[in-house]
Amino acid sequence: MISDQIKKGKERAPHRSLLFATGMTRSDMSKPFIGICNSYESFVPGHCHLNKVGEWLKKCVIEAGGVPMEFNTIAVCDGIAMAHPGMKFSLPSRELIADSVETVARAHCFDAMICVPNCDKIVPGMIIGAIRTGIPTIFASGGPMAPGHDPKTGKDTDLNSVFEAVGAENVGKITEKDLQAVEETSCPGCGSCSGMFTANSMNCLCEAFGLALPGNGSILAIDPRRKELWRQAAFRAVALAKAGGPLPKDLITQASMDNAITLDMAMGGSTNTVLHTLAIAREAGIDYSLTRMNEISARTPYICKLAPSGHYHVVDLDRAGGVMAILKRLPRELIQTDAPTVGGQTIGEQIDAARIADDDVIRTLENPYSQDGGLAVLWGNLAEKGSVVKKGGVAPSMMTFTGQAICFDSQEEACAGILAGKVKPGHVVVIRYEGPKGGPGMQEMLAPTSYIIGAGLGESVALITDGRFSGATHGACVGHVSPEAAEGGLIGLLKDGDEITIDIPKRALNANLTEDEIAARRKAQAAWTPRIRGGWLERYARLVGNASTGASLKS
Image 1: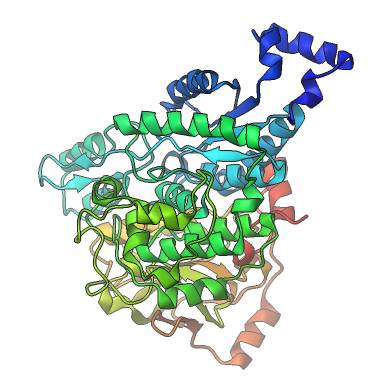
Image 2: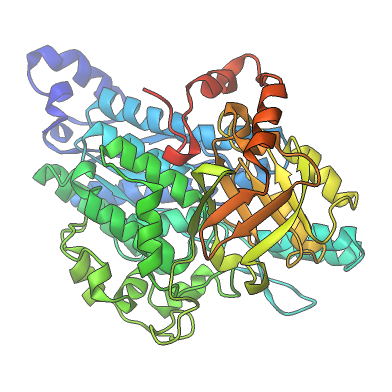
């Protein structure tokens, strides 16, 4: 076993002495060491229950014949970090998490690992770290939150409802008392936010990657079945340790990447999944591109529309059969069915065992929301290296849109402008210098997109940015514009009043400017000056790559 490096032989007596200090016994030295990588933090709703999950996993690992060794990573709640400078730290936290997983796991010689993520950057950060370790790893997330309930309308609500309510109250569509009622009821308890936002998108993709057991992405955090899933994960981790695999790199392959992206397109996941899957592929040594993602989108029907694009939530997906039920509904030729999984079955065998319980939540192939996927990549003079839109959340009238630019050089400036009434029907809101390098950190734009929707402008105003979006964003919002403004992208040369065309069916994003005009503006533009001096963000800005390749740190 890997752990023999710290527990076998007389020369390891000092190591054993330190292990004994933690409560281990002589008999534990013959058992596999199972790392439990927990992302517990008391102030993050997706993670505030994970201390109890960690205790349960430790009991289950011991029952299965292993020795649990728990450690923690950081976790950033994007909702709490939203719309203030703290959001600059969200995407960079992915890299810190990956580094911490690699560091602790390699330094302490685990035989296998259970990763317990839940929210946004934690999932891909742990996946990247697990790939580096070369240690058998199973993912067991904390589970999604139940939706809230608006006492006035009777409708299900979620975090996005609160952001949109801010915009609605600002223009007098609802009262301050209504806003307070929404904020007090929309997030009813622990778990990752209840829609198909980034956290739940990534936890669902873990199933398609083969890194997690069926149910990982959809069973609620408070559902008793989640406790049994954690137990199964613990027993499986001990079995993986004894078998020596499969390893994360055995599971993260071209085939499983295709399966994950196919699932993503079928359920219209967060645009952030594009960033994260590209970064995961890079770490695994897989040549994967935005072009391939568009090819998969073109052949994958969009059959499961959850919030923010639809009115269903992840609890409804679970009731309908979960992730494997979505894959079961798709034509079999779209799935690499022989791809292995951490559970020991092929993905095809897991799909065969699934049951589809609701044809409205998971639509039939004869009744899809669209014949192509819920995400799309756009190119053009504004996005020579690509941009991303959640097309499943775009109103039909906005699929092709030409409008006049109104430019803001930061998210904060844009939020102030929108709330002040500067944005009018026919505008394309341009938010720039918010890319990986320029932000730095590629802030999410849930606040400005929600203010637009809340103000009733969702079908008359578009938005483009070199930043990114929360999974809760919907509307005609195009993000990840590459190259970003800070690296000379055309988005940095736009002026108020410039005509911009977004053509999602043709996968195009263009500023209607002549080459001569673009050249003149580029010649006159002053050099970009970094916003942040000192600290982690300055280092991040120097090292981070383009969004089109996952915004990974350069080696």
